[in-house]
Image (tube, rainbow over all chains, first blue to last red):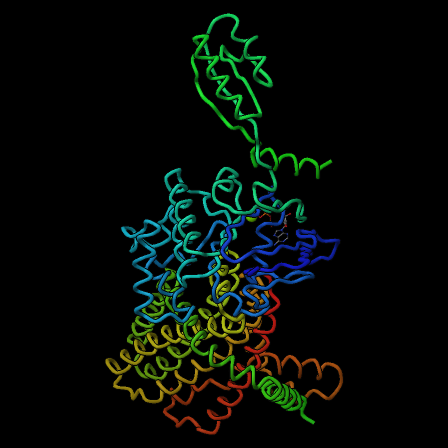
Length: 309
Length: 287
Ligand SMILES: Nc1ncnc2c1ncn2[C@@H]1O[C@H](COP(=O)(O)OP(=O)(O)OP(=O)(O)O)[C@@H](O)[C@H]1O
Ligand SMILES: [Mg+2]
């Protein structure tokens, strides 16, 4: 398998300048990120997500262990040639406007003027800042800074994108756009590593999820592997003649009455049609049919609370 | 033997050895590094130039020079000399001041505000960043010194019919001195906060001035521990007196070329050592 980022036994201890035991932010984290996949690192506040990303980008150094990006060790700056990074709460030289920012950052990658101009147009339109391109960044709102941050992360047309909480600070529309953008980039074959607290978004976007807690990897895999596929089918109905419930009990695994609605659950798809037929025969109204499955959120809470015990 | 000389020779040998040992990396590094340094410097220049505080200082400098003109206007006679020497004083002082503040706000505030994340996460070496910041700072200080010199020369020509060739030369050499000083402050700024950098900058300048004034005293101290300490201090701090030709410019005496050359050699060596140390320190810095 083609590996984009390989993290081996990464440990990070933050030491205070006055000595002391220090704080172990990462504890032998090993993780391989495949080329072309979208993977999310999730975990409670302070679990070491940002620390991991900062180590990958050479902003801080691991206490032990190492990592490589596209086969190049992260200890050389060349490893970052094909990487785009959106920092957590990005902050840029605020006297520049979006155009100048992209131009300067494009230069750092050694892009020629014509490429820079072309990218600038594309990216400003992409992130929706085309109309505010001449506004100094200090006058930007938080969400606009986030957008500018994404644009600068894409300036070198990177193969690998590292995004630290890409949707934090964005309005619902902006968050939706960001998700759409990430999906689009993923379809273009980019490898995407992101951190997020929005689990619904992670479920929706990512091929794999890694759960980090207190610097340790607690679980890693696709949603299917982590949560499993549910066979449960729920039928929600209302009304119907009096004997509808005992009749349903014969067909379904469980039947409950909640707030005037009947919720019948079964594991077998064959049963579904029989239940529906029964409803029709007893003049009940079918409201919805669902396939509930445990959410990533439930798994998250479970994994993290297990660790706490 | 002269301790100062030993220290200089040792550092020269160290620099040479480093160059020889790492020649392949250096060749490869320079190929990537020179354009990269240039880009960082350009970005630094563009960014610093727009800081409002700098514009205020430039305005103040121009006003002070015009004010000086007013004073000399009131005391004719020695006014041309006073204007030259006082003006160069001002240029140098403000140059040093601005260089301290720029250094304090370049790397430390980049780290503080986390603007550095989006720069160092690009394929930029740590040393390229440091050297780029240094030359960016020099460009800003150069702009400032240039403007002040220009104002001074215009005032001189307009009011005194005083020849300005020497003033220009003395100003240029003073700028070189400021560049040497800036390199020293840069070293501190790679590991310290803004405030510490400012304090260290002023200390460096103060100690340098005292040392320059007490040259003859130090020369007369006999051996022993205090002499060693003074020798080390003297080797560490930048010798700014080497770049002071105010008297020559004011009195219309030729500036001795050999002194300028000596200052250049010393300065280039000093800056090189400072930038190497700053890069090594910054390489270990977690941001
Ligand atoms: N520069 C630093 N110095 C000392 N400790 C730090 C530093 N940066 C982070 N830490 C500590 O390391 C741990 C992990 O922090 P990190 O920023 O990686 O968390 P995170 O998972 O990104 O959290 P969040 O979800 O809040 O962004 C925390 O306990 C934090 O206090
Ligand atoms: Mg974080």
